[in-house]
Length: 465
Image 1: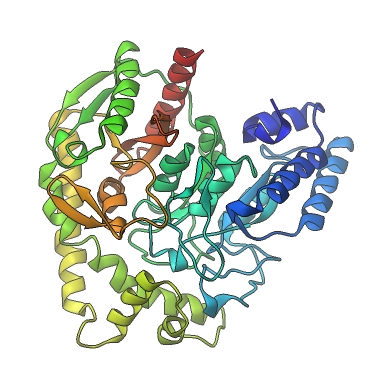
Image 2 (image 1 turned 90 degrees about the vertical axis):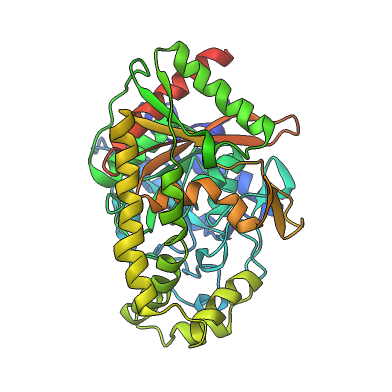
């Protein structure tokens, strides 16, 4: 195995044991980044600073100092997360010269665990999209096929991890922005329960929906990163005895055949390990989801962005940011919210936030309680990564949906229901494009979800060996 292919826990273990130098790992990763600039994964990187930090890590190792669990491991961050020494552009022109004066808390917690700040990676402008197409800072490409989307909005994170440009990248997830790139790029992605990870110092969309989360090449890495951020340990668990719900309606019925087959094959492996698949009907979640899915984050987006700009002393407001938006799909959102005739009203938001979304969350809890299930499983995305330059709509069943709505079809409902979840890479289609299986559970069940992900990883690894 090449050095840059190591997972975070493998790298940290090797550095701690003296089998690997942090500088050697950093140099290998930087060389990979230089060789793959056409992937457009990174928006900001300071190679000399990375190497200097790696040398410092090696000095601390040699001096016998206590080492953190991520000692010497390089980690990249979505360009909406404040990292000192790098601009936080959030993929938009208005913020191109915003250099934060400190790290976001999630960055600082990983730094204190020994991680090296590798740089910033690309994203969909202001996180309002699922393809990461970005005319200003470049569009991250899918390493499995550069003509395909890496997903979004944390597309640069998916690209970086899949192409071995660092073992872990931290993205953000509002409606699938960690799990979708994980699925399209063939890596692991984890959406923590809202509030489990700190959101300060991150350009926001929605306080009701936003959370940072990791993408990695190992389920064990997801648990390791979560422990470094939260201090909570996830134990290894067995799939035996787990009841896994499968709702054909909505979540599976329009899945591409190869996508569905790969996801079902992974679930069959879980059955062989003693898990029980339970047919459930989650269709009562759909209406309250549709009644709140876009209203809540779009309304909160205007308010929260202005609060972020004011907190950081930036001479900008929602209108000024909107004036410089480059992406046509994002401009539609900003223009609609700046026009009093099309802006989401406070009353519409109140009903969505206090009636429909709570009804969705209650329906999700009821689904689990009524069927006595531990997890809900479905394809993370209903199809493989589409063309970056393809049509603006995709056919799902008898409907033509926008590419955005089609991509986030499953992941958005799961996050709107406040679930915590992971995307599990379960193989590739005949065209060599990855597929992800979503495993979700009600809020607060992070340990269960991460433990199940590690159990799936062991089972699938054994089956492929």
